[in-house]
Each structure stands twice: as C-alpha cells, then as structure tokens.
Amino acid sequence: MKTVVKNIDRTQLKSEKSKGIIAQAGEILRAGGLVAFPTETVYGLGADGLNEDAAGKIYAAKGRPSDNPLIVHITEIKDLKKIAAVVPGEAYKIADRYWPGPITMIFEKTGEVPYGTTGMLETVAVRMPDDEVAREIIRAGGGFVAAPSANTSGRPSPTSAAHVKEDLDGKIDMIVDGGRVEIGVESTILDMTVTPPMILRPGAVTKEMLEELIGEVSVDRSLIDADSKEPPKAPGMKYRHYAPRAELSIVEGRMEPVIREINRLAEKKIADGYCVGIIGTDETAKKYENGIIKSIGTRTDEATIAGHLYSILREFDEERVDYIFCESFPTEGIGSAIMNRLMKAAGHHVISV
Image (cartoon, rainbow, N blue to C red; front, side):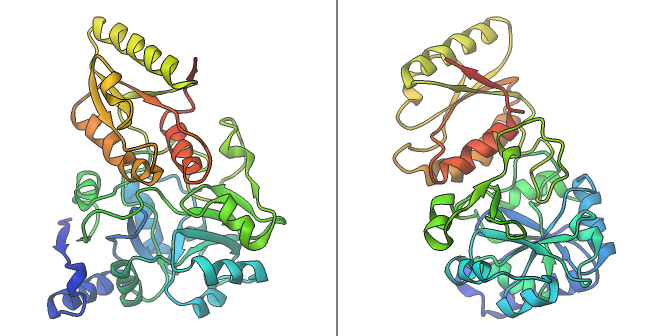
C-alpha cells in the first residue's frame, strides 16, 4: 500500500486545496480506509467507527491487541445519543465545559457501535476533539471516527506527521500533516458508567478540574497497580505503552539526590560500553555530566514537559541509546498525565533515592 501524505495549512482551511484534502480524507474513511490526522492531543489513526471491518484495519496496522478499545470521535453533541445508550446529567455538564477538548467519556454503548470498535466491551469511549483539522475530517468521514494514536502499538505516541510516517508508512491510506500538536499527551478518560465517575487515564483535563465541576471523581487503581488483571475499559490501561526501544528508568526523590544518582548510573553504564540518555529539565540539564542529555521542558510550566515527552523518547530511539534515566515529576494537575505516561513507558521501573 502506498501512503499518501498531504500537508494542510491550518490558516487556510476554507481554501480549495484544503477542502480537497479534507474531502479526499473523508472519502477514504467512508470507503473503510485509514487516515492519520492531527488532534490537539496527539495524531490519531482514523477509521469509520461504525464499520467493524474498518475498525479491524486499525488493529492490524498498529499491531494493537484486539481487546484494547478504540475511542469514537464526534463533532456534534447530538450525535452522542446515537452511540451512547445512557448519558448522565454530569456528562452534559462536562461536555458543556470541556467539549470540544481533551477529554473522553465512557458510556454504555448502543447497538450502532460494533464490538470490533469497543474491544468486545459493552461500553463506548467518546471524544469531541478541539482541533479544527480533526473536526473537518471527522465530519467529512461520516461523523463517527474511531481514532487511537497513529503509531505502532506500544511505541511513543506521535506528535508530528513524521512520527506517523516512521511507524505506519505503507500500512495506511493517508496522512494529513497539520504540523505539531498542541498538548502532546492523550486525552483524559472518564468512566461515566460508575458512581462516582472514575478517571481511567489522566490528561489535560485534571481530577481537580472535574471535581470543581461535578463533585467527587475517583481514580482507577490500575493507574497505580502495574499488575492489574482487569480487562481494559479504555486505551492504555492494560498494556505497556509509549515505550522507547531503550530501557527507561524513572529516578524519584529530592532533586539533588536524584541528580547524583542519575549521574552515577549513567557513568556506570557508559563505563560498561552502553549509550545512555538522560531526561532532565531546563532547571537541571546542566547538572548532568555524561551521556546524551535532553531537557524536556521547564518545571515552572508542566505543559512544556507534556508537549515534549513523546518526541524526546523518539529522538533517543533515533540516537540508538541503550538506557534512559529520567527525573520524576509531581502528580498534581497535568503532572499526573506526565507520570502516568512515563510509568507506562518504563514498565513501572522506578528507582527511589
């Protein structure tokens, strides 16, 4: 299969060129094909979410386990009733505040949604993205587009079209290149089928933000427990995700001891003949002595850390490092999403000092 790559100008979405690209993407989706496109979180790999055969192509292209459910993307709140059997009042409050935006909600599904999209579950995950390129493509593709991250399953998620091409070139029909994404980590996932609603994956819409709006919100234990055997209700819960090819370790503790321990570990691995990568921040990067050192952003603005996380992991892949040592981060606000992704990428390998 030849993968077509089309560059779209976000400032000219009403131009004939952009309309043509969107129409082409929509035709591919309606015909049961696969299109990768940007959202505000990461690049998504889209297929018709109501077409079981099309959804199956996503699993095949990504090498994704068949019990890992997909998120269905919509652009109109009225469309929720077609795919969600029960929509509690709190969900409409959340949608009113945060849709379009980086939050996914889980509902009991209707018969319109095939089990091939939901990973054989009786629930469906639904999101309304804020990215206008994504929204135009979803509309053109029929309005119900299943779209997990557009990467090989288990790899760091793509924040640029180049990342998509690296993983999926020749496996999908089309990549729409809309530049780098805004947020850089996947959406918050909130299970609305339980009381109180439960966060299954942290993201840019935080527990604190949700509780301010609807009251008590719980957090699923599997975000903490690496050995959870529960079937996944949402993407990213059961399997190792976001992982670089190198062995990644997170070093946690007070900052100065963390820096000393990372320097010690890096020196030892380099002496043994290995290539080592270190993930620090603007505040700490100059304190590291050996290895390939990268700043992930500044601790004064954790959005910069979220935005650079996946691209840095992919850079280390290109540089063929054998081991990566990374500082830990606070788990308040979007820090919860950052540490969730890092823990998954590291296979929960943490060194405490």
